[in-house]
Every structure is written in C-alpha cells, then in structure tokens.
Length: 85
Image 1 (cartoon, rainbow, N blue to C red):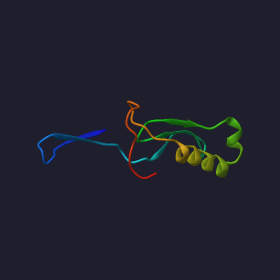
Image 2: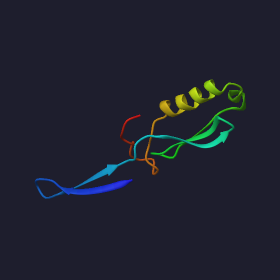
Image 3: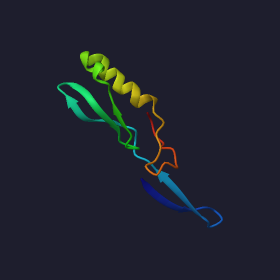
Image 4: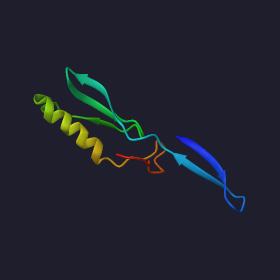
C-alpha cells in the first residue's frame, strides 16, 4: 500500500491510499491446472476443490470466477482496494 500526503487549499493534509492493481496470481499448479490463486492487491487466496481438476478449462474458469467475484479489501481490512478488476 502506498501512502501519498498532499495539502489541500486550506493547508490540511490529505492522505491518499493507493492499492496495487487486482491481478490473479497462481501460487500452485497441478500440472497445467491452477490449484491455488491469490489476489495481488489484497492477498486473498482461492483454492479449487479436487473435483475441479478433472477438466483443465473448467478449473481455470472457476479460478478466474472466484477471483472476479471477490470483494478486494486492504490487508488491514479497513479500506477497499481500488483499481480495475
């Protein structure tokens, strides 16, 4: 998380929190199938059930769906992350 401090017109400080972009990173692969993924912005992890590994295309789609559906929060859990995704 990046903190940027600026001054407003009245001289009061403004603190801007900047979160990294939401990117799905695969942490563990079983062959060519993603097994464990993580959001680069909030570090939330996503795992697939064993039944999902029977079909590589469906497993990849399921992992992407879990990532797309999650609500990203800061690591402290107070500020929502910003950015695309």
